[in-house]
Amino acid sequence: MDFLLDDRRLAIEVKSGRVHETDLKGLSALSDDAPVGRRMVVCLERSPRELTDRHGPVQLLPLDEFVRQLWAGELI
Image: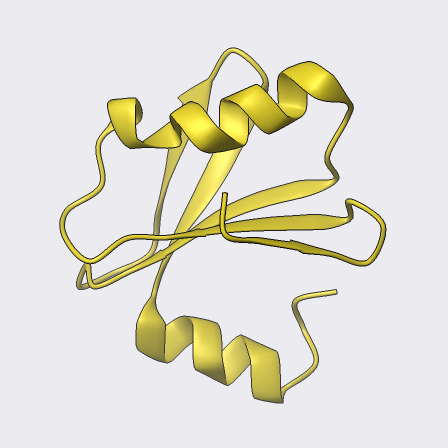
C-alpha cells in the first residue's frame, strides 16, 4: 500500500506492470487491520478493471484514468 488518504477513505497501491490477485497483499493486509472505504491500484494496464479479494473489490485504474479522476475531484 503506497498511499492512504482521508482517514482511510481511499487506499492506493501503485504497480508498474500487469496486476494479479497476488499483488493485492498490501491492500488486503491494510483491510485486515481496519476497514478501508475504497481500495485502488494505479497501474499501466490499458483499461480499468476490478479484482476481488476476501475484503471485496479492488479497482484497477490505468494511470491516465487515475489522473483524469484526480483532476476532476472524483477520487474522494
